[in-house]
Image (cartoon, helix red, strand yellow):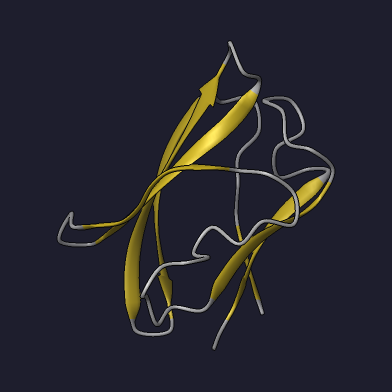
Length: 95
């Protein structure tokens, strides 16, 4: 299990991370109207893995996808702009 670092007080985030042999780029966007974050996960070559996935506690962002990356799950409190990465953690579990 690894913790994927998240930054609070940012409505938009882009960061890269390597999980096993997978170099991934994450995009997080806060949807003000719906009051939650959506996540896009791309390969380093900009090919999509997951697009528009809602970031909710206990939900595997890679569920239902044919990816051999493992599971990426948010644990803790419901994320907001002010508590993202503080009262919750995005965790990666290898296969």
